[in-house]
Amino acid sequence: MFRQLFLITLVRSDLSDAHATNYLKVVAATLVVYDHIITIQQEVDLIWRNPWNLTSCLYRIDIAL
Image 1: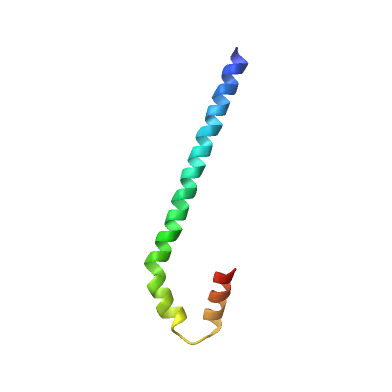
Image 2: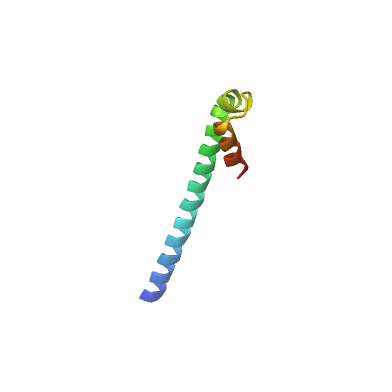
């Protein structure tokens, strides 16, 4: 009896951890998208409208990877 209760508690705990992990993944993705939205104009002005140099090349390589 005790073993069954322990297993049920363990399964519930694992499910709770899985839900928390999924919520944290959504939060992280939301923050990445938000950061991209608020900095896109700076990226266009500083990287894409200027001539190629070492910094812009490294930035473009980083985005491609």
